[in-house]
Length: 434
Image 1 (cartoon, rainbow, N blue to C red):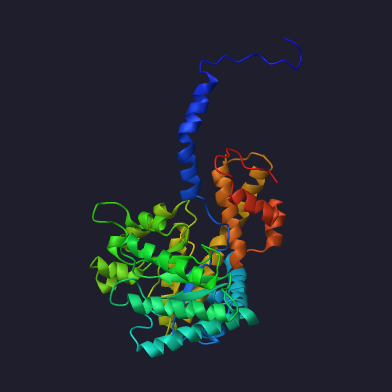
Image 2: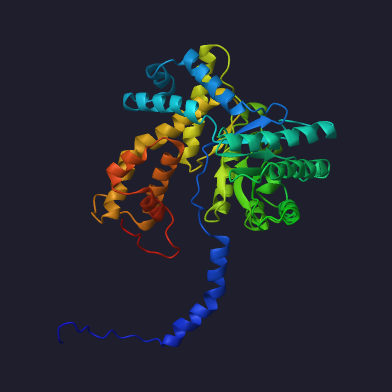
């Protein structure tokens, strides 16, 4: 056989067979692309803060940061004392503490929801009207003057009959107020609570479609989160996973699934003393949510703890340890977001998040660098692992746990490179090298 010639490989099937199979699977290919587009690649906040509609003010975000810093000053005034409370290693103590303080000064809240549901309660219509209009005005002002959180919006009342009209009106007033103030901000997030049936999600979609038509907005411009707070939202009467049907009912508008710790626990009859995000009932619900959302582009969020870090130092430390432990537990289970109910929670939120990314940073960076350079090593990583490694580094960068300089130094990769590894094309068996 001459140089450059290759031996002919024998086959048994006619080319038409492959063509016929491809044609038969074309609808499935299209369905995969429609239903499972993958992660959107945008930043996911590490937490959501809920503030009642009557409490929310122009200085709320800065106030939360100042209260959190004051709590640190009183109960853990230096890295060593904070590390002792949380069990941080000597290596992590100083960088985590320094980054927590810097975060509280620069960006204390990543995602804020003005609450018109449980945190606000039933009010006279005129009062809620004014609160909704005020929330729109303050959020619009915050985005204009640079004091907004990266993500902000409202949690309306649910689609159940007793409060449905009130919830729709509040949402209309809020969105109209934003439009009148200059338009919808890029960081706008809406939350639909206590969803029980997919039809309620469909109703929310129709509501947003009508608003978009009324205001001349691009179809699909407004998305929303779905709160999972009832047993029916996990398991329907026919035994199917309701939450999966809810994602589809959202017609591409669903941005997140948020677990509601206390409503869901109460729905299952869990005693108040045991209502927590690490209860087996919570783990079951969140596992179903996670599987239903995987690949759809819908993010998942854990709930909250109601144990507040207030009072004497010993009590604050106990609450901090609990919150830190719950947050680290959620992160290990790929729940990268949760709720925070009090300013005293955000120091341990950021401590847990920063420690999670910094303690695994060097190993993740080294593995990704070897993969990108096809250098081999003692672990045989695949494209799916490269996706996980780059996603880990990107989340660390987004929240401030990591700096792009140190990531680039250890990986030799740019942020664009990381994003490429984090979102490979469907069906790629190999990830692109840098």
